[in-house]
Image (tube, rainbow, N blue to C red; front, side, top):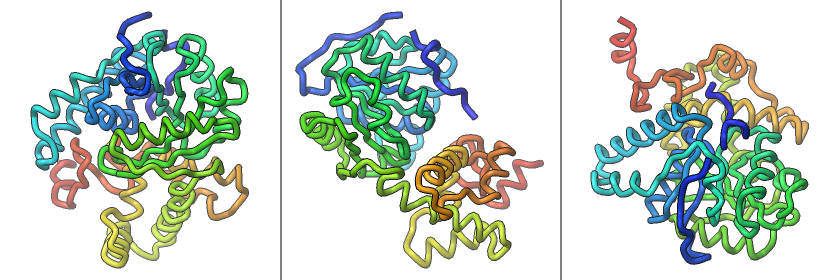
Length: 320
């Protein structure tokens, strides 16, 4: 699992001139994992400058290189051109220094589901940033109201839950905390539309709509596999052909990251106390074995360097 971003890893100044207030001229993204890469690409593709941060130069390079490869894949699929790739990357500025975020109109955190780490980021951002800037958490399960409790601007804190792959999924859930202002909600809704998403307002509750709905589905598929009722391939085929899904539940879990899925399930099981969110033992075992899905090349299925599922022939060739 990638190291978690820590506050002490993020501090020296850099950038940038601020344009008009509601122009969304500069947006900061904290964390350049798969989700952070997708968010940064989506914002930049909408013509907005993006500042991205990671805990080290090495982590930044890994994230930016991965984003470049993703854009290359999109070019191969004819969904982007080489000039669009250059334009997107030209608007994304990497840094390891949180102080550089001081002029951001909006900051979006895309780090692990760790309450204390997210709370500290909010505190740190408002100690160096503009008081009227908006802090957006990409949390899937945590309470916005609790995260905002110790902040001096709880009215400017809101949730924006993107789904992976961010550039392709047209939905974003907007989650208001108890003290989130109407002004903040309207601004973030407008921002969501500006970057090509359809915003759906969700009241604060663990899991919101999408995470709460999908986790029991993924969990049940894992139980079916663990109990030997069907193979992983059979489960995928049945759900794709039977229900018209583009991706079956096990490959979907691999794409999210099995460690992330486990964290979400544990949080919802703790918060709601419902057995449907109790993680399948098979999921726990796979996370222990570091078979975390696409990001490491193996989960319920094996994946090549481009994140595509490997056929049995390719798997055997790769093992030779």
